[in-house]
Length: 132
Image (cartoon, rainbow, N blue to C red; front, side, top):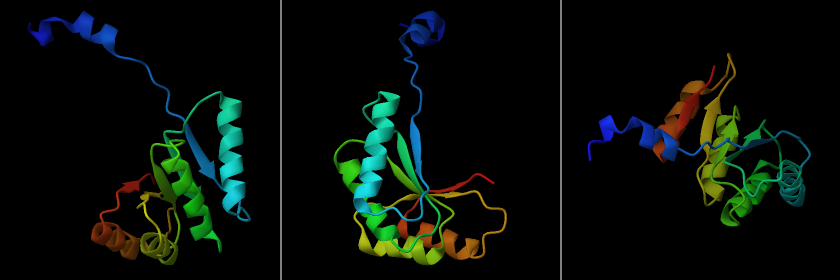
């Protein structure tokens, strides 16, 4: 069967999937707050999982929040995890103290330690996505 001549049958087999992503943006969230927020969001969306959960902003309790995200991943509530515009220190803390490596999303126009973040991403095999 020549697939190039069978475009219609291929198009009919493509399943439409809407990506469901979530951001954790509150600075005072602790471990259980993150899990509770994600459960509530999934319930309100009437969905079983997120395609990605992104941790946004530098926070003093960032590693506890990251542990919560890892538990959500282990439980099947998300397919992937990432961070947006955190500092190189926070990124290293996550890399050093956690099980999963995040994807790093860059959105800021003036990120102070961008070159260092790129080096960390390269050194630890972290996917770096430039969205600026």
